[in-house]
Amino acid sequence: MMVGKKFFKACAVAVLALSCACGALAKEKVILDTDMVEGFDDGMAMLMLATSPEIELLGVTITLGNTWVAEGTAHALRQLEAVKMEWKIPVMMGIDMPTRAGRQATLMEEIRTFGSGFDGYWGAYSSVRPDDWKAVYRTKYGHEPTCAPMDGHAVTFIIETVRRNPGEVTIVEIGAPCNLAAAIRMAPDIVPLIKRVIYMGGAFFVPGNTTPRAEFNWWCDPEAARTCVRAPFREQIVVPLDACHRMPYGAPKLAELIRLTKNDIIRPMHQAKYDFVYGSGKARFQLFMWDLVAAAVCIDETLITDSVTAFIDVDTTYGSGYGQALVYVTGVPPLGAQKVKFVTDIDTVRIWKMIDDLCASL
Image 1 (cartoon, one colour):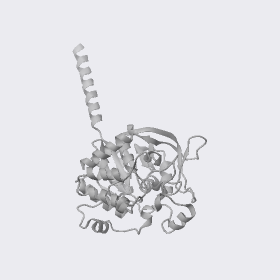
Image 2 (cartoon, rainbow, N blue to C red; image 1 turned 90 degrees about the vertical axis):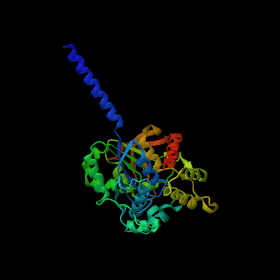
Image 3 (cartoon, helix red, strand yellow; image 1 turned 45 degrees about the vertical axis):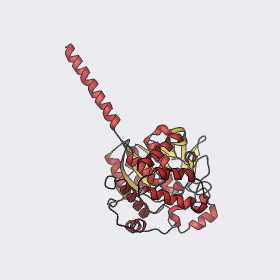
Image 4 (cartoon, helix red, strand yellow; image 1 turned 45 degrees about the horizontal axis):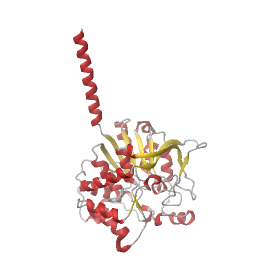
């Protein structure tokens, strides 16, 4: 009888050890929803997640923001080609228009009436929307692509992926959250199934960068942003300008990152940014790491050194506060607002090391 007890105890210990080992090997399942640009910032955020041993990047969904969806799709595919992951990580095309109809057509009047900031940067809204991602790719890179986005739509991909992996998928939202907002409107059953949402968006205790009050990603589609932050997800983490302002960089740092990058496709993308911002002796606006901070926090949440948990909302009133992130640290929040954790400080030393190491590994 004593032998039997020892046997079953040994089995129990072995099963527990195996379970712990499997848990240690489990990767964080992630969907990256992005308004993709080349290199810094979205492109490198994607590559950080794609190459991290802690992350299983299930897919990249392209949304409106810095670029139109056709442009973002071409950029994403080219950068995945650069690291030989173009067939490993699916890219899905998503929503290309904001919730507010006719936004681009009335943008100049909106800016004139409500004010602007960040050197007049309005992302995709300042250019004509292309319809064909292949044409963008050929024009930009001078040859045919070796891969293509998956058939179907980004919104459907988000819904189906979350349903297949209940409680396991983190959404890293670093563009205008049009796709995620549409997904939870179409399929509200996925809200409790999403493990967490990590945004790069909003500005709480610092000024906005696109208008005096609003940060760019949420300003692109305030209604979509409000839909998302009001959804009762299990967990929401917001990386706002408050945290990103901890990571400024200028010409010397960008030049260092270019020197570290050996990849023959990615390095020219960094150089093009350097030439645009600092070429010919120009002294333009201060650069910051934005979306890369959200990607880093997804990989290692201990990078957050200070945060506030409070009810937040997004101003969708068409006025000077359109797109502004609102926080209710005290007082009564509006009906429907949710409590989220928004980041106010980060371990900049460790994040810069992650960025340096990423560049050196490419």
